[in-house]
Length: 350
Ligand SMILES: NC(=O)c1ccc[n+]([C@@H]2O[C@H](COP(=O)([O-])OP(=O)(O)OC[C@H]3O[C@@H](n4cnc5c(N)ncnc54)[C@H](OP(=O)(O)O)[C@@H]3O)[C@@H](O)[C@H]2O)c1
Image (cartoon, rainbow, N blue to C red; front, side, top):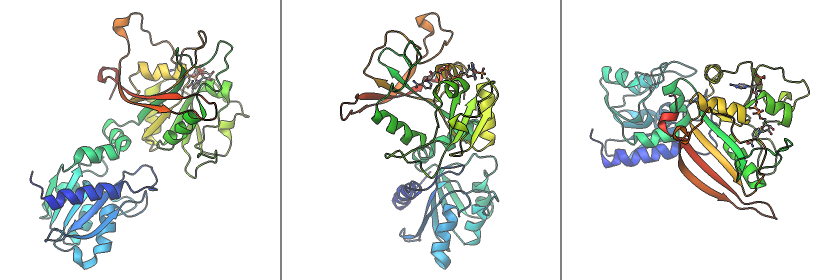
């Protein structure tokens, strides 16, 4: 594969455009596009602003107008071949007279795939794979969901230093510090759905909304998901009007994820409790773990994770640490440690 320096620089710019802050997360990937003239200079650029708005290529073509003819389109995702709320990008590029298309990540989404081939058939030169890893990382959950036909699952939990999620009398507020709780809201906001078991709803009555630093709800709320067979009492906060809620009357994690995937959920934030977490771990359906560890000991009380059916150390569930961050305590609050991990490949079902 041969890419020019100008194409490489343009792809870096396209990735930057795709990551423009404020673009709502949702069922669509983040995509950026730069059109280069025959002299390697930029003619126009565009990015996708979310479902229902023009795709990145179409936005760039609109900006370029007649100057699009003879350009090279440098785009972070293979142009789509699909007529959804907007027309296929591959056809728009052909109609605009684009000479060459360089893309980063191939689009394996069954409803959109084949754009590269459509372009080739129409006589456009096509090269893929430039900065593909960066493009995949940009849309980590989207890529995972498209390739695995289920949402990416992040299990978040708060624990004491001795691995307890609640004290012997069942009290668990607040294991985590205010800084850890704020950080949790930041991570929630990156997901599409937040999932807990029926017992957490019964015992803790959480609202499961996403709030900002001043505890105000964000405009975009996640789908709230409660999993388990028992009824949810009508007075529970999760049933208020602050966000949509779905009750999945199942104990089967894969069935739950399949249902959520069909609703365009690509990233699930699994917030417990220990029973639900253990069920997902045993099924190999946890893709990332975020643990907030508080500097306190309880010595008794619920374990942060339920029984995994492991009796001997040789069978321990292994994870790789990908990040360790200290969340400073202020005003006398605890300093917590956030550990981010990914389950070892053998522990995951993809
Ligand atoms: N420290 C933390 O990060 C954290 C986070 C959340 C909760 N908590 C604490 O955890 C406690 C609740 O823990 P928990 O483990 O009892 O609650 P849970 O995991 O929220 O819910 C357990 C319930 O989920 C249902 N369920 C759904 N799928 C299941 C499956 N595959 N296997 C078994 N049960 C399944 C069952 O109820 P059905 O009978 O309805 O099917 C089960 O009783 C609370 O005290 C809460 O404070 C701590």
